[in-house]
Image: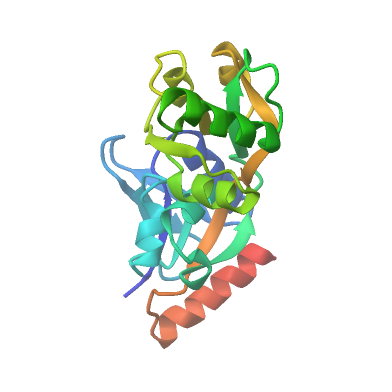
Length: 230
């Protein structure tokens, strides 16, 4: 058996992860074509590279099929209930920064804070006979956040893509989504709530608390983590 390291399978996240390991004298390489999710690890004993989508990595860590994995804070906390019991954060990697935020139409000139939102949501339900709709793919994180701040009159609408366009398309009244620059929000005439930051996220190296290790694997894991921290 060997240790399994899960890394995003394409794009900037994969490239930046490869660079991060390379700076620590561990070379990750993709083998085969872009359609083949195969890779190799050089410079670390007993470690296999597994290329997956960033969204799959939390599940594989929680199932114990990966020992280590690189994915966003947002994906771990959204996809894994009681995530602290299933994974351990090893190191933030310093890239892939994004904020999960709440945004409303710019035309809502009197709505700038969560207190304003709470009042508007109650009035919206009274006027329209249904709750204000928030488009998002981060149901767990948004629901927990709004519960903590006391906003109740809303319903979450699932959106797996082009979330910012749901207000224009009239399938939602506001959105909760990941943003790094805010440009897409502004292009869709949305504005961030002043206190609507749900979570700051970045690419992070995680260790599975579930994955089993024999003595040799445990020794290799300890050695690898010491090198990465060093």
